Image (cartoon, rainbow, N blue to C red; front, side, top):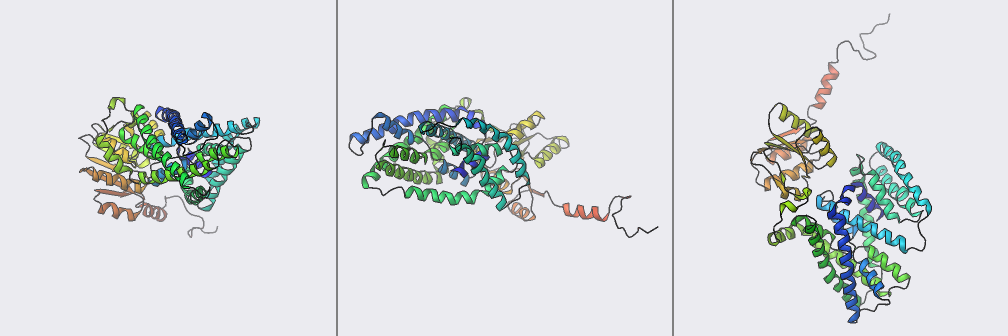
Length: 483
């Protein structure tokens, strides 16, 4: 959990927390889910499936425990599909972060001791992060980068917060956020992948080791899954539509979040230790969490097919009510579309406009880059060409006859090319590559122009070495004679 939350922070956009589709959905879903969960458990107690030791407070606490979605599973699903940077992925992660904050607040309030007054000293982590970011600038790759990430998550992240009585998971998330804007944050996150995978396996093993279930425990767990997982899906979908999300975005967010959280195990374990719940509730909760994760994993494996089927029967959206970020991306009257507005993309854009006199529009997924280019009067839109949802939102104007694939990652350009082919685009496609082997791949795929951005660089350096500027002479030149 510590490493997972740290890597969430590395890739998370804090602005997502301020969006109503995130905090509004999280708050309303939690309220309704507590009511439905408590009602389901209460009904099970009435018909004799389970024995409750307390009153409404006990039932409400169990409903609260089951109202959260699994951070471990959701982030794993998003990472496997490279959707953690997509719009729906950011909404899902924002909802998870809000849920985690609520969980940390609950654990803090339920704890025997309040946080230490020394907690205010945690503000020193912010200036300390400046020093740590400079260290990251000089850290190499491989094992040293992995070690740096683990130390940051455990040290100034988890342990610093735990030492003052604040849940360490929140500290790991905060530490990741402090590194999120660093140029190497993505590289650091990827370097921790194998370590996270190892601990993820261990996490699921610990769920299975909680206790030996009975048939009654299994029956109750299945009832909870049968009632609450469909409710979660419907609740997240309706609230997404309420806050202006498209059908596709709402459905994909709902599929990702329709499961039970590992936090439920923590709440129930605390309740059992304090005599609030009967011992068998830990077994029931562990079964419900495990079964819910299996159901959610299977559903997300076929998410694109499910979305396509539901999209055919769900009511059409009113575009005027959609969130601006989720509306169709219209390239208008642009003749050329440049995907990726880094150094190469900007150079291509300027060349086409200044010398070609063409109407060009650039698209990039970095909000800060887009805002800076807009200030410089570039015609740019924010969008992620590696996100399936981007292509469903894209409306290419009838005059767009050329697309330039200028993204920094070859796989991203390959994905965009596949989507253009699926969409039936029959105009000119140009692409940039960084390795000679990638040229043949694009050429075979029918790309009209492929440019290796490093092609000729070695020859240029050799020519410069053989023909240095006149008047300059290397030390030890043979023409030098002693006086």
